[in-house]
Length: 377
Image 1: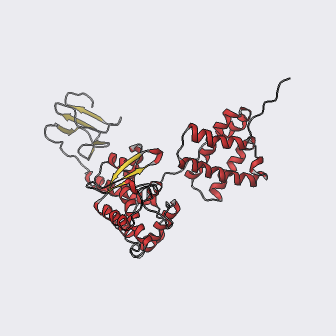
Image 2 (image 1 turned 30 degrees about the vertical axis):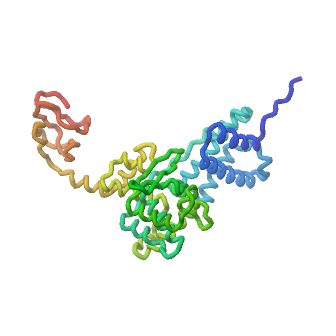
Image 3 (image 1 turned 120 degrees about the vertical axis):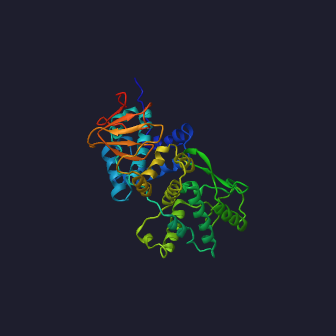
């Protein structure tokens, strides 16, 4: 007589997912574990109400497409989460179901339906940032006569200097700061990546004064809360909003704008870009894994676009000496761009007179660009 095969229930699977899969096998960071924990806390609360059963009685087969879809709709409609947050919660559920399918293959039919659900697409808006004058108003807003005001001043100055994420800011320890001849701060970044960011003289001076007034142990948070523990993400955001509200007297536009720590991060990147800092350096400064992420600041900088437009002159300019000359052979109807000159040349057929090919050009099948020997370029 064959013995009946029993598979683990939903509760034991969820526990094993956190203890074995995330912590032991994948060695996920505490932030990742916390994010997944919060996702399932919200999901179990919703599932209890919808299924009318306690979380201990929920089965793996209950996690079908209708329940998951209703939960994702609940996040957007009732909790007013953005599509990004909704997708992050969905990714946590998918990760668990992928693991559960290996342990409990009898539920693969239900799991397959959920795994087939796509991530929701969203519009990628241009990044918002503050001008230098607006940043200065925010940094000077906290009251230096109070302990919290002095902490907020140096904390916001460090946030702007480093362009750190708020999670990286609250994770800074006193031991991470170096205040010798080359002041810098070590940042424990996203995905366990560490980087060192130089401190501007003004920021280093503020941190020195802050630590002189508050000689914290080296293993304590650089910017603690009132009880001496690390500040929360919400705490930093609230203190920034308070500073922005105080600065609204100088900058009335703050009353209609939503200012978050990530806006300060965007402002740091934009100001560095406008100052001529190379985009690869900005990527390293911010801790971006790829410069493709940093390119969004180039797209958002209207001043750079205006400068590019002003340098683009309608008409023809002669190339530099030694590069040959251009001559028009037909009526101008199309466009050719000589990138190294930054000039728009209106033409349909140009003939190149010179010993070598012209500088870099933007090719287009509609253009017929030829050298004097008749070869197409």
